[in-house]
Length: 147
Image 1 (cartoon, rainbow, N blue to C red):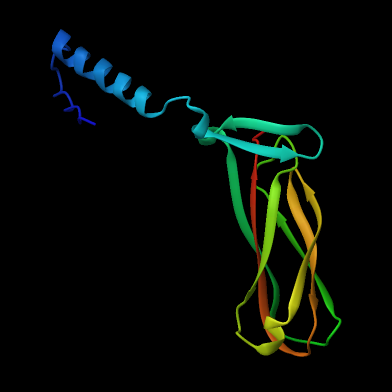
Image 2: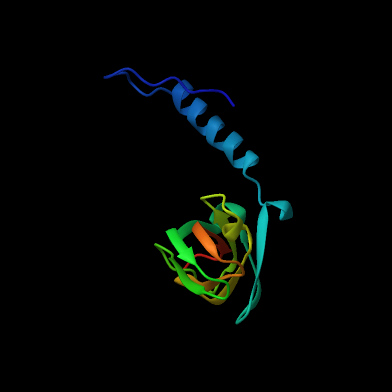
């Protein structure tokens, strides 16, 4: 896409310059077309499938530090919670992944369970299946329709 030169202070806006602006806007409009492949579809629990332009979809990523240099026993559970800074219109599709920050064997043997996905956040638990020292965080990615 052509780059439009900035006008000098006091420069009169002539037809040529306005033509360049309109031409650039039209070219940009063609690049951001409304083709079907530019849409994101999110299957919501309450409202079924919702389609929205991909540029308008909301993607939120966050994390919660669940255990930081902690000692856990097999069977222990620790909660996690990731709040969204802005709400979704419907509960988004979300995934939660554990990150073994310390790299210890106890941090490799755990299960992440999401308990609740709402328009404002995700909550769940991390269940440790082995004893030992751990530093674990949970990373959450949510994709949905903005409010």
